Each structure stands twice: as structure tokens, then as C-alpha cells.
Image 1 (spheres, rainbow over the protein chains, first blue to last red):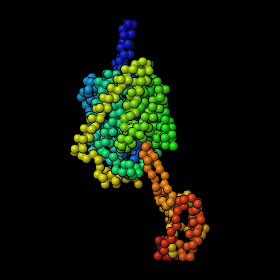
Image 2 (image 1 turned 180 degrees about the horizontal axis):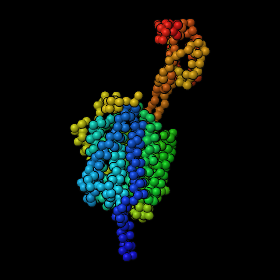
Image 3 (image 1 turned 60 degrees about the vertical axis):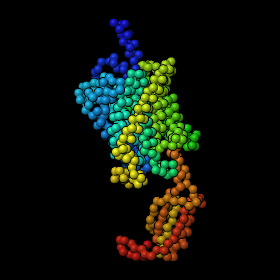
Image 4 (image 1 turned 135 degrees about the vertical axis):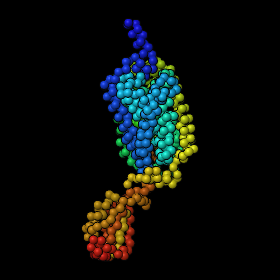
Length: 429
Length: 112
């Protein structure tokens, strides 16, 4: 009896972290459920109004409402599509590439149904939690093409990108697909959410072209105080994003939120000090960018590392994302308007690799470089490469196809007048 | 009658208002405007993107005055709005053909 117990324990220790749930019985736990419903609310708050405010504060006044509309539409349309087909294809079955149709329109999901991927909470809550991740990812991409994308084209993009880019990647990493089984560590979405959105945004901003007046006109933000408020909502909501990825009310969630918060703080300070040294003044935009950089970069590592690693990762995030948003962007001359690639893309990739460096077996059952397992870094690179390739190629093809039917960009005079008036018939007074 | 238009630094508005009230000129119209003369603007930087801000916030005061006190009004505005730094502003004086108080129908000097 004892020997088979040890054998089971060793088998559990050897498998990737997400599969450790296989050893537990499936039974709804009240504490886990309470936390996951709360975490779901926190992550939804990150989209509305978190991201909506964060983005709209940084665009020009004439485009504020249109920018918020993009986030609203991503949530509304994305949620329905997720419920209809996205969840099923991402989180059912055991296929390496994609899931099954067994949960289309949530069929068969009774009130007490439980997913094998989250054994102590109702499947409805698991589905909803994952939904909030899906919709914020697609809403993030819009930041790269702020101020110039046609709303109709954007809606088609939301539908197509969610189903063709996000769903497969989510399945590969979290839903039982080939990246998860290969041992790629991604606790809360460094690849699935941040790198994915960053690459999607980079491709989109190249295809749509720069804003008119980019490099010559004054494109200064409308109201950075809105962006600061949005950052606060994102920061607090991230406790649900990373803490909830433990899928339970447990100590691992505790370690994850501590690492998360510390990464945000060190991200702020790093960007602030860098900019102070580089430009002579520490800007508020820089501080909030540092916070989001830290948060995005710790995301894949948060449930695998020690809390103090969050400080190190936040410092790396603040440094590399500062470089990406100032030096790299100006050198390559792409108009990634709200730095989705510079912050989320670069941050997500960096954090995913750092998860392979700092992973500690006592936290997430996998050792990284610091515990002698250098191979984990290679596995992480493999994950980054796979997501980068799929996101880049499919985003490109999707936008080309949409653009064949509907112009991706607004007309020149509409861009000059402003999207609020030209796309939505409204304006801030 | 004359219409006196003064472009001044915003923080000087209360001083100018007090100076005009002391002369018996009550009532004025104030607009927030932007402008520049010899005062240079500044540069703002947003995450690697630099923008030159050339237009500075100013306040425009318009006040209708009776004939005869034009010199006193211009002197009062000039003295109360002055800081000695570049960017203090300008005063323009135009002829005013007619003035009407809407509530009572009084015209010209009675309307001012």
C-alpha cells in the first residue's frame, strides 16, 4: 500500500504542473469555487473598465469613445463566441492540436458538471473564468491599431482571431494540447495572452500602417489620469488573473499574487529610474507602463517561482520593455500605438523564458535553471516559438482575408475628423 | 466707445479684474485661448514619442469702455498683467460702433 502510494506520488511529481490535478477526485469545493467566481469578476474588471480606461486615456480626444467601443465589443462578441464554440474547442478532449465539439453551446454542462482540468470547481465557473482571459486577449490587440481601424473590420477580426488564433493556442498550452504535454510552463498566460496579443498587434500595425501624422503631428494622450485609473484596475484585477490561475483557494495562489504584486512594483520603479536617467524626468506614463510590463512578464511565472523572484522579473521587465517601447520601436518605425508588442509581446516572451529559469519544484512541481534543470529553458523557448509562429501567421492571413472584403482602415477624412464621430456618431463634449 | 482686447497670462486674471473694477469698469468677457509671441513652448515626451507644444495657454479679456477712459484702462491692464517675463501678452483697442444691454434695451454708453 505504501509502495504504490510512493509510486503515485513520484508519478505526480514527474508530470507537468497542470496535470497534477489528475490525482485529485472531482468534487466541488466551496472555498475554491468562491475564490474562482471572485477571480472571474476581477479578470472581467480588467477588461471593463480596466483596459478600456487604460487605452482610452492614451489616445487622442477624438478617438476616446471608439477605443472604449473596441473593448466593449471584444467582451460582448468574444463572450458569446466563447460560450458557443470557443470553450469547447479549447478545453475539451485530449487532442494535441485542438479540442472537441462536445461542449458546443455548453451542451452537456449541467449545473454540477466538472472539467477534468479544474477538478474542484463547477465547470461553468471554469468556462467563465477562461472566457475572461479570451476576451481580454483579443481586446489587447486593438491597442496596436488605435485611432485607425474600421469598426466593422474590427468586429470580424474579434470573431476570427478569437476562434483561429486564441482558441488553438489556449488548447495547446492549457487545454491538454501538445505544448502543455511537452512541459511548457505558462501559469496564467505569458504565451496564451501576452505574447499572443503582442504578436497579433505587431502584425496588425504593420498591415494597417501608421497613423496619419505619425512622426510629425502632435498625437499626445487625451487624459493620462484615465490611463492611471485603468492601470490600477488592471493591477488589482491581476490578483484574479494570476491568483485565480491556481484554480483554487490555496497557498500556491498566495505565492502567485505576492510574486505578481512585487513584479508590478519593481516594474514601476525600474521604468521610473530608467526614464529619469534617460530623459531627465520620470513620467507617469512611464510608471504605469512599468507596472503593466512587470505584471505581464510575471504572468507565466507567477505560480512556479518564489515571491522574491517577482522583484527580479519585474526589474528585467521594466528594463527590456522600456528598451522595446523607446529604442526598438523608433528604430524599426512601426506604429504600435499603445505598445502592445513592446509591453505585452516582449514581456510575455521574456516572462515565459524566465519561468524556465526561476521555476522551483516546491512551488509548481517543476524545476527550472536555478535548480539545475537547464532543459526547461529550452522547452520554454519552444513554447514561445510555437505561439509566435501561429499568432503571427494566422493574424496575417486573417487580416488579409478580412481586408479583401472590408477595408481594414478608416478613410483618411474619417481619421482626421476622429473615429468617435465618423464611426459612432458621438463625441465627448 | 472702444472694445479693449487683452491677451494675458491666466494667473493674472484676478489682478486685472480688480484693477478694472477700481476704475469703475464692471463686466467683461473672458475666454481661454492658446497663443505664442516670443515665448517659446516646451517639449513633452510620451513613451519615446516627442511632441513640441508651441501654443501656450492664455486668457483673453474683452471689455467695452466709454470714450475718454481708454488710456487709463490700457494702463491699468498693462500694470496689473505685467510680470516682466516673456509671454506677458498684448492689448488691442478697437472702435466699438454700438452696444446694447439686452435686458433693458439701453444703448451705447448706458449699456456699458
